Image 1 (tube, helix red, strand yellow):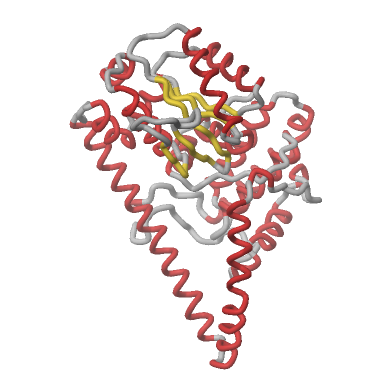
Image 2 (cartoon, rainbow, N blue to C red):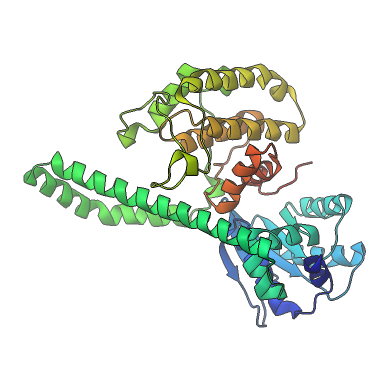
Length: 394
């Protein structure tokens, strides 16, 4: 309640409002966050420039010191909306300490649709939830001066410990795989061959760099995802194994196309199965559970194909995405296969022609954890935003 009261009765001014907005976006998985002029000066009708899953946005913070009626909120939103066209971005993230009903949010979305702009709205209740979560406790203390209770301190340190474990695990896996690849190349190459390869690398390095720079400057939203002959309405175990071989072919994985036959768990490299954050099904269950998932998808595919309800389609795609990852059918590459299938499903059923990117940020993993409890809405929001650039589709 203290968080809501302090937000609603904002006394921190515009500078802290813009800083809070930028930190909230970082907390919720946005990247390339660039606050413009929080200390004053012309900002080009934008408080923040940011990205999420390759969609580009301007961020606008609206934190008046008193409660405003919807007319006043809409007026400010409409003014900030002009910054989308001026800054050549995909949409706007509107962050406000005001209360907005679902119907009022729909009206703001309609206003953005008129301008062909994407929109994501952070209203007071959504901000409160973020600040009152373990990930937001530090930000809440810094901006609002609300100290953590003993229970919140325990949640905070538990969350940080798990996050640190994950970072260490990812870093260790990267280092180990890099060393393994290097040793493998030395083991299989004579000095002469190694010298030839090195000379070839040096002669082509500048060309590769030029191509990489071109790709980085290119708007990834304009990269077309091709509609291929693989149709997910026909997805079965054999086709899934074939896709695994094709997508991971260059990794030289010796288990290409093979369903998992070992027990695995998700956690740090040194963790035991008892300490794991998630334990996928045992090996003997992988085939029947995967087969059941694919069979259910084939059965519902026709209904999805005929449906005009995009929310229904996204919900089923979200369920499939989570269930596939929860099964963990392969020893390696499950994330890449899941993302490929997501792109293909969106291409077939939502006529999506863009490359869909979901970045491995904490909110994505938190959403997958929520899905374990039966709540798929956070994951659905992330997938909706990744496909359309906005979280709500009408």
